Amino acid sequence: MLSLDLGAKVYVVTGANGGLGRAISEYLAGRGATLYMVCRNKERGDKARDEIVQQTGNQKVHTLIADVALAAEVRSAMAELASREKRVDGIVCNAGAMTPEKTITPEGFETTLAAGLLHGAYLLSSLALPLLRKSADPRVTFLSSGGMYNGKFPGFAVANCESAKYNQEYAYVYVKRAQVILAEELTKLAPDVKWLSVHPGWTETPGVTGWLGSGQKYLQPMRNLWQGVEGISWMTVCPGDELKSGEFYLDRRPQVKHIAGAFFSEGTYTKNTKAEVEQLMSVLHEKVGKFDPSGPVVPHKEGDEAKPEAV
View 1: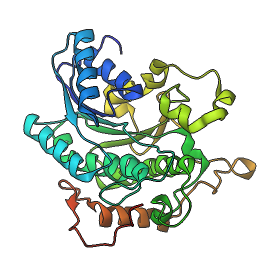
View 2: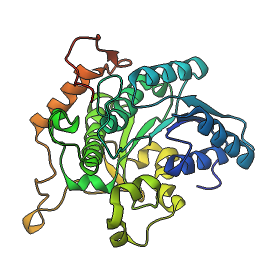
View 3: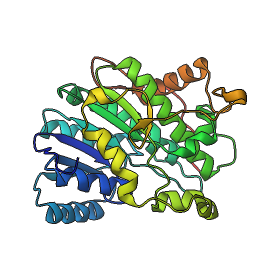
């Protein structure tokens, strides 16, 4: 894997200037790939790109500046990508957000949900679908987490914190569970692309440290960055026939998606019903845009639905 030549491949990594996204970017650039690093902050993004270029000697590393919590910025970044590339071979949706206090984006959504699901996963990958379909072996990977084992998706109103008190730990859990569901559902809608979710293991990053808090001591020793991204990097570049679309991976292998029940049954505590999953997809279509399997997501018209009140 370390000697693989990716000189003919094109990849997109979000949240690419730090943590897991940076480590994945370094791997791809080091193998010669054309790489687009989606970063929220231009200064930090350009600095990371320049460092990776210097480190790898690969001049085909570029930045796309976008806050993935904002639909308008995701659309702008994907339009720029489409103007520069004829195809994309793989996307790693790594960027996310977890705020200690409830925050609402200017577009009216809770920030963690907007960045990790609505726009940073569903919208971004949907907009890239025409480019992905021009690849012989496309795939999209959603960076989920073992944190998703702590619950099922509670419904949009709860995940968007429209009434309940905000809890940053559960905001994270809800998004990570939803990413697993999203990979399953998009596999049905666009089966010619591999849709995957993945747990990097308990890796020492600022995001994980912030989420676990004092609980981090129970998961020692934590993984270093390369240990966390080795399996993800493999998923990004391996032959597609070695992957099963819709699955949740850790260390190159599909994992169970739910906490076990009695007598080795799958359990239902973390499992959403078919109706709940259908409702989630319906809300994504309504709030973000309808997923068109033959093309990019079609945006909703502003004002079609009531948006939550900013706080």
